Amino acid sequence: MTFTKDPDAVLDYSVDWSLWLAGDEISSSEWILEDGVDLEQVTAPHTATKATVWLGGGEKGTTYLVTNRIVTVGGRTDDRTISVKVEDR
Image 1 (spheres, rainbow, N blue to C red):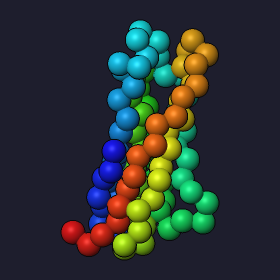
Image 2 (image 1 turned 90 degrees about the vertical axis):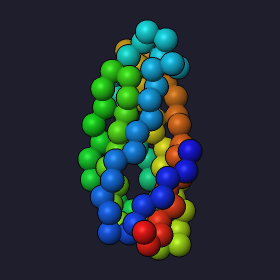
Image 3 (image 1 turned 45 degrees about the vertical axis):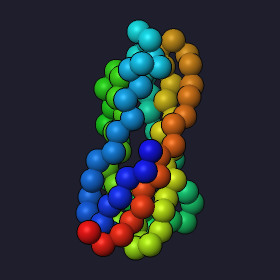
Image 4 (image 1 turned 180 degrees about the horizontal axis):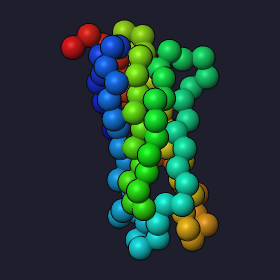
């Protein structure tokens, strides 16, 4: 999945884990950003089936990889990575 954001925007991006969970629930969620990047994690709430991150900043012309790692109530761990391309909009 690739998303586009303006460098001045603060926007939310989500991963819906409901199909993969198959009845399990998210117990914890973290978002991993590449080290030394200008993209900033503002907040990262989650529900039982969906993880969301609010991102701000970023350098125009750069595409960032942002990984969501969850742990489920049943003890499973998995990652999903999204791309966030920063450009003037």
